[in-house]
Image 1 (cartoon, each protein chain N blue to C red):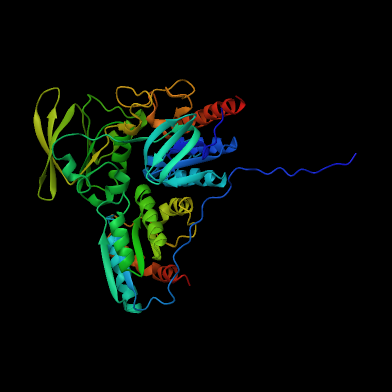
Image 2: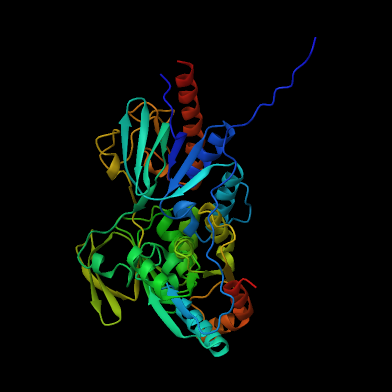
Length: 311
Length: 177
């Protein structure tokens, strides 16, 4: 049975996955809404330069890429809602999305709500968020102009943002718990060649304390057990991501880390609910792969809706 | 055989919602003006300079300053209501990163919805994002003053100079004239 709904398709999340899904849905003539509680473009909007998105040989700023993607979608007539999703329910044949503005129904859903930065979970962290600890160098780097900073995390995110910080801070110390950096090779080379960047591998941060205007990081070498103190003005934590799936518990199947389990067509354990981008398990967590996911999920959703209409 | 023409209408939505902006004042003289700073470096210097220059010219009844605790979140409803009730106009800075630009625009739209005219201060790097966010929120013509990027991490006198250079644009954006 084909029940009437507010929308054919609701997309939760306005990052590269959600925006691409919206574009494909509009081309399929699906009445579509994209719900985003924060920034259109998602986390990529805060990237100084995106160098690995095809079509931009000189790179493109995250804000420009986000603006272009959003603009393309608005031209296609997709509706945007700026509100927080608090739940998803199944009522009869329809999927209902509960938001701070009200409830909306759809034939199908694409969940593309992305991730939040993972926190260290060590003493001192919570107290210093916004006044010494940040999860975004491009947003908060200028607070520490000419001062020493630490970047915790030696993956792509940590090295990219660390390299950006070398243009602002007096010194950038990258701290990685693994024996070596795990960023892309090209980023590792840039980091090692940068005279303002120090790299400490096999190093764990055990606590953060305030020491006047400076923050003291209590460090421990995980191989030798040797302890040391590093004093910096600012700390940037880039140790990975956690999926925003709290409101989906009990509805769709999640993996041990909270990422949404999907099939090859990006369908979740619930028929007609799809997941795309960083929020699904097995994602490469790149803007371009998120965009690809968005396209796949929208095509799958279109097939699902078309089949439903024919029944 | 007679032929008939059938017009097929496309039922899909093609237009975004459009919200009304607050009416602009006839004059800026003697107004109560709110200056909302989102804690981004340099934004306070810029706002203070705007306050100084505008007050000198328009003799405001009062200048109200408010600092948001975090740039990457919206101003809480109580503060929006209170500032909107107190101020005739509100200037918000600083949109110079992705998330902070988004929330500057979001706050501005919320003030406009409450009947308080606003101007958002955005850096050149984030102008396109600010405009697209405003359009998505239903206020494509939301007044913005665009200043050269960056505003943070540069000498204070250079930030103040950016306010000097943008003064006429600010007056135009505030008055709508």
